[in-house]
Image (tube, rainbow, N blue to C red):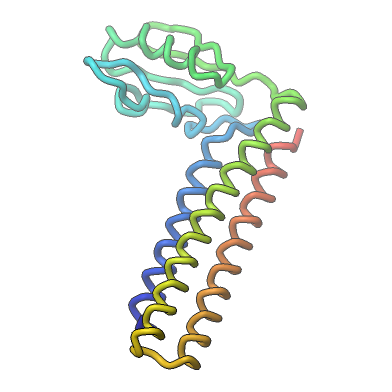
Length: 186
């Protein structure tokens, strides 16, 4: 495992885990409206399931309101049904080709369940980072065994990989703490 390329590749993969975590927690609802809340919603459209943002435009006209403008008028019913069945606890109001979605105040129980989901996302991301770390360490052991690098170089590289892993995991923890604070804020 040469220092330049492989460490950069490990860092790229770890950064990918952070990006996936950021995307996951962005879809968690806080007290403020965000178009990302509807990311998990898929609509039965044209014979297949499609993400909501591929059949409609989602905007945030007010702090506690989402607006969904459906492009094809025949899809309004399907979009309404998909949002209601999404387990997000949202009840759209149909207004022509638009759906207005008031966001109810989050109660304490719902906030705690969202925090739990955020912790699950964080753990999933940490596991992904640890897998990347394991791949890097395995590569170092193999390179040392094959005689490509010496024991001292292997140890130094292992320490760099571990340091990188620790930094990424602490970044995930920091993002989680931020999101938890945002969710629990009344």
